[in-house]
Image (tube, rainbow, N blue to C red; front, side):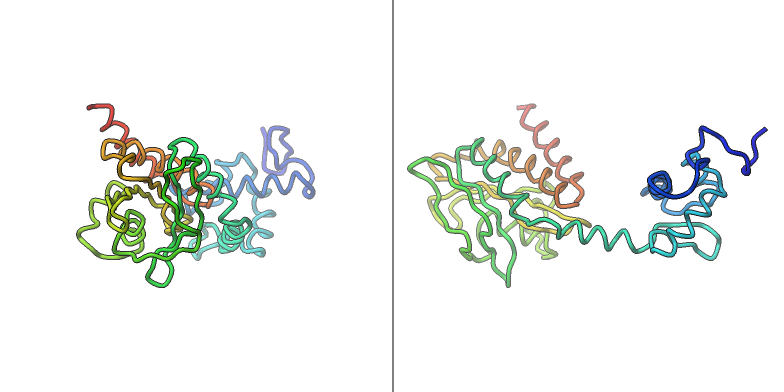
Length: 259
């Protein structure tokens, strides 16, 4: 019969402390926590990791000192503040362009229309990145161009997901995409969707635009599916949750298939 003082070959904690093995066991302890189990007792951690309590206690001492775990007054453990600091570093460890620009190229190649990424800046929407098709007739706007928020599909998205309480934007918030027909330029149609980072923070509006004579109303929903798919990819890459975007894409795709 095994006791905690005996070595069990099946227990990752039975080998000597230190080195890669100790790091792996520390990561196993952190991985025991999830959204449904954000607070665990020592016994629960042991059960979820397969590690002996004595092994866990040795590692928890270091994890607490470094801020990865914290112990509450009732003896339960939860994740500490250090992972939050690291997640913020992750978000800034690459440039936004590295994530967004390749997706814009893919959107333009698939749709044959202009794709853009707008951000909210000082009450205006600004073209941060833009990729244009090789077609002679296209919507041509320079990166850095600034436009008002009250017009255009991207303006609706930036307003709807930045805390603006406008009842007219309720449908946009529910379906996670917006469209516009000649609102800024009478000859231009546009579709736009949000991109999120951690905590559903709005990073910008992924947008597809083209001449109204070519980007017809019957093409809008297909354009929205392209954008939602790529917005989910971008949100994941930026550390965000793509759940709402995936749900919106599923609803739209099912609606289109039923017609």
